[in-house]
Image (cartoon, rainbow, N blue to C red):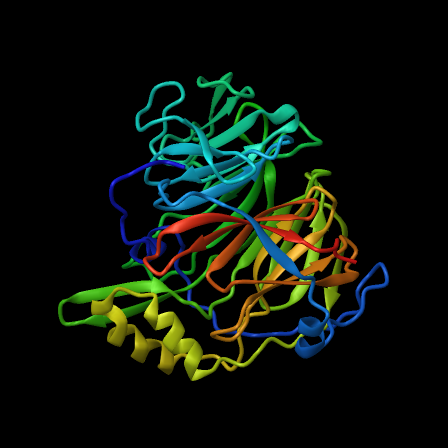
Length: 387
């Protein structure tokens, strides 16, 4: 991991990386799923049958991250961790020990202004995306300098996120408009395919509203924060190059190819948990102290009846889809696992303060924040494969 003598409060950073739109609608998917999929079992049944996990590795206390924005794993079990503020990639061995760092702040070869994604490619090459420099760099295994660098902002604003397809010579990019606190117009995110020259290819695959913000005006100006109960578009790129898209109000996944043609999908009946006052208190606790009371009133005035159905979407190399479900305050985070056709395989429950970034076989690679809001990499092993 990138080493530093101090850490920066991370909660204030969230509003700088999320686009503005307040959405509080909720709708449950109810169509019959394909591939023999059925309705999601009740919460108590899912918990009782949850796949047991145990911690097997953790990053060392003398290796500090500031803002983790990408995690991936190579064939040897080495973990690559991108840090936004440190502008470098930390390389951990399978036990969590730091074995190397890649890059430093700058604009030269192998240098970064920021990092918003790392991806291990076939053969263990590493792709690192730097949106501030509008370029991606690809490193050969063990190399300190990139084998090649590609500009992805020559024809338009650079993507917010970018992913190389493993089965095709293309990139999948998500474009998000820059956040403007004084702009109340609806923002739109777009999924696009980029060619190997970094330029958009064809029309956008999908366009959808960006996640919402709460905006509170006062005599001295206004303040904004991401709406914790708002809906958003989620996507994941599978190992076969297909793209899975989910609007978070329901468990309805649409699968498409790189031309935007629908190739599959499913919809599972699911009723998300109700939003409780404890949920508001939990979200308020993660805000800067001077803003807590301001946003408490805003949240309580616009509180939806229920959470959105999904909060995250992940595709693993074995073709499974992991959907992060919203859970009430104080409960572990649930990840429901499905086949690409929608058959429910089981659920994994992880500590609430952790976020799942990668799955390799039975190993789950997470980023977990401690009481001081400092992130650590924590690896869990499942006792059994889902399904």
